[in-house]
Amino acid sequence: MKKALSIFVNVLAWIFLILALLITIMVFSSSKNNGVANLFGFMPMAVESDSMKPTFKQGDLIICKEIDDFNAIKENDVITFWTTIEGQRVKNTHRIIEVINDEGTVKYVTKGDNNAVKDSDIISQGAVIGSWTNVKLPLVGKILDFIRTKTGFFICIVIPMAIFFLFELYKFIATIIEAKRPESVEVDEDEIKRRAIEEYLAAQKKAEGTADNAKDTAENIADKVGSLADNAADKAEALVDKAESAVETAAETVASKAADEAEAIGNAAEAIADTAEDKILDANDTVAEAVEDAVETVKAAD
Image (cartoon, rainbow, N blue to C red):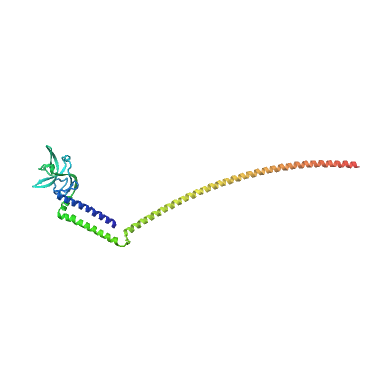
């Protein structure tokens, strides 16, 4: 706050200094140019009567400009010119109501907007000081007239400029003294408050960012867990289907093998039975033959 106030005061002081210099130039310029100040072709003039009211009135400041081309001056323009009033040569600013061209010599008939009759004198180009630029500053003319006096110049220019230079000299000396002092830590309450607020806001913003990141992370984890659970359920269901299919396949295979083995056993048993029956018949034939041989042998022995 103190720093901002100091900058504002410095800027204001420099603006005043520049204005004071411009006014000083105007005052000295007017003193060397029959009372007409001229700044780069522009002439500030204080209005001394109400003859042009309401266009501008006494006490206003108007800005006129030097005329480079008199052919551009036409009827209804407002010009400032030298004229004689009560035996004195004075400046006057009135409106042109007629342009007279007398064998190549141009003259102007003028009249104040607030006057009932036109001016008695016809104005030659040599008497014209300048033309009005349509710029006016109310009441500034009175201030300018006061500044042009010795008292006004001393009060409004000399004293403020002296104060300004003394203030700048004080600042310069204070800066030198401060530079020679050992470094010290100065506590600026406003700066501390500002930094504390900035740190608090930064921490709050960081916390909000962390919370948002945590929330996003949790949501991502939840999504991943849900996706893993869905995949696990799908895999379990697929495994159950595979197990059921394997059981059915195994059951069918076992049943098929059992049927084949039973059929093979039945065939083998049938083959064994046929073989046994053939052997029994052969044995019976052999026994019968043996008995017959024995009987014949017995009979032969008798």
